[in-house]
Amino acid sequence: MKENNANARTGHDSYFRSVFKAPERAAELLKLAARHNESLAEFLKTVDLSTLTEISESFSDTESFGYADLAFTVKITDSEVSDHNKARDADLLVGILEEHKSSKDPNITAQLVKYWYHIMAKNQRNIPTVAIVFYNGRESWNLENKTMFPNYPKYYRNIGLPFRLELVDIG
Image (cartoon, rainbow, N blue to C red; front, side, top):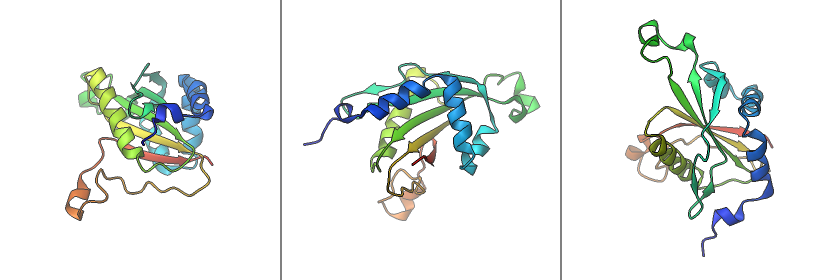
């Protein structure tokens, strides 16, 4: 029988959520994590963390997955927007999903896709999104295979995720 993850969530999940729900704290966590994650550092160069805004009640589907830990939007920095597009796209946004895991989860990709879909549907706006998994487990975990269908024939593996996926090992 499949256990409902909403019931299986532990205290550290709610702790992570409560501590990093504040945009200022989330921004500090992202900056700290970027010191050891080159790809995340590259992402942070393109956004203005002072504009980080929580997507409140971002997603909840306790039937299947429980709650997403955190979801935010952030504006692209002016230096990253071409002069031609500045007036028209002054409010270019990027979505950030933050999920905390204390053990390897083979369903993390499906979970994040579901979160992403519901947030985009709720906001009726499709924006580029970076999903960041903060992992503090004991085992090594590699999320390098960033495809929706890793077990399918090679042809189908080029179908990518609807977001950029980053793993930050804080363990």
